[in-house]
Image (cartoon, rainbow, N blue to C red):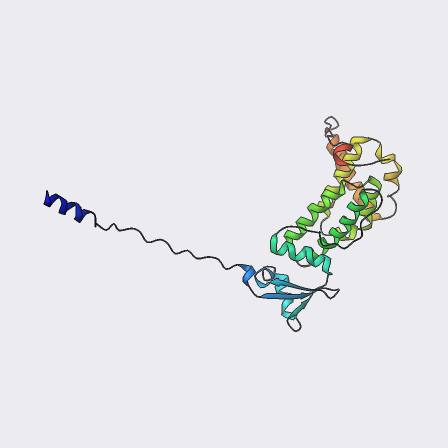
Length: 241
């Protein structure tokens, strides 16, 4: 009995070898990096963690020309907010705008945001900031649907120069608008909303001709197949009166 108790006592102290736990290395947070200072065109100073500022090659190159540790930017504080917010978070935020509350038809707010996004889009292209460019385009796509046809066409015609490097994307947006107009009224091209915007800009007229030609080919493939247009005035928010 005493021998059994001694054996149990010895078994209780047997050491079990275990694999060592792997070392865990935490990545350094970009928020812990020193601040990079930027001055907007209207004199506002933005402080951005170095870990984020160094991600964009064009911005890193521009910082080599800084004065007294501050890098001058070509855009104002409103655009800078959207720019740096997207750089740090990957999201598009226009909540910093100081514009007065809009008064009038609902589409005026959409038109205001479109003009704002055009500026963001232009800066994104200048700095090679593809994520911001894509976000600005998505924001514009959401707002286009709120514009009456005449206002939409006028807006595109007036800002056509912004899209000289993005004509394929613009063609798609114009086609969506005209398809929506066609769904409501197949003779929309005879309306004043459509005709009133023709003849002012050869470049814009050429764009319309190209888009309508593509629509016609889609509707009458070999003269027999017709595409079913499913967009409606309610789903797109267009007003053709």
